[in-house]
Length: 301
Figure 1 (cartoon, rainbow, N blue to C red):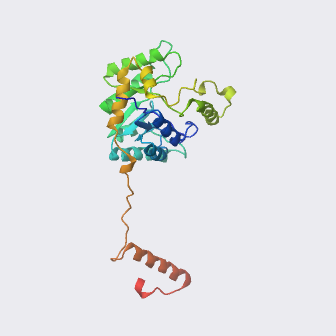
Figure 2: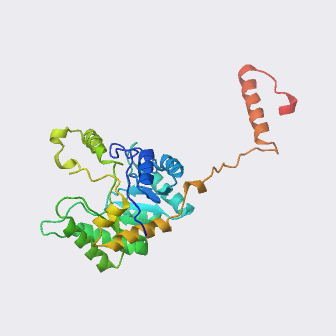
Figure 3: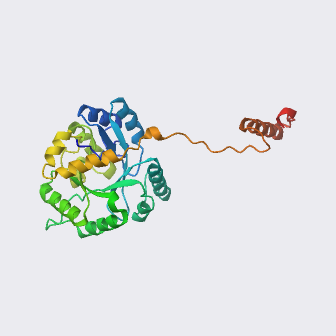
């Protein structure tokens, strides 16, 4: 199975992604991807334009999103069918209604309540402890995720080029073995080509209200968050080939497409056997009669 990128952030993740969905879809096609997932933060905002662009370039879009939780590590969520997409949309609505505009407040319990039919990948930690171990809190949360989500949960692995990649991948693989669950290769894409790294840095500074000179560790440490060719990802994870296969397997299982959606209009109420248009006409005349004192024609009574 060829590698499929399952973690892509577009510019619809405000002040985080540095490439348009169309650019990412076009680049994916140029690199030979058969499918790609868009995982904007607490939002499906980028998937519509990504879907249209992906169809144009003969790439299958996997609708997804990243759930940033208030009480646990982030999860990437991939609805496998239309009903699961509806539940995930409801979950995002719940989070949006709790918070101010532009924010989304979600908890672990919310995810468990709306999880049916969705595959999840836990976002891996950025670093290890001084003893090169996974943080105890992360392991505790992840173990709870495993108990609540069962076989629908995987653990992601990303090469961040931070100097401890080999140790970090080993610890992630070790945890997966302990809990008998899949490890999935990711690249945490934030732009389609390396040249967009500068723009992504500027966006980070705007978000964090700082300058390039004072941003420090708030910036990504390098320009590796671009969409890499599938064979390069296979090389980077050559010690863990199952992580590449697991990414492809998840992509193959997530067959939901935005093409399955259609408008569903509510039932219009029109009493006394009138059609909706007749009822609208009657109400319009009633309004005119009340305002201007005109009589309602017999034919619309």
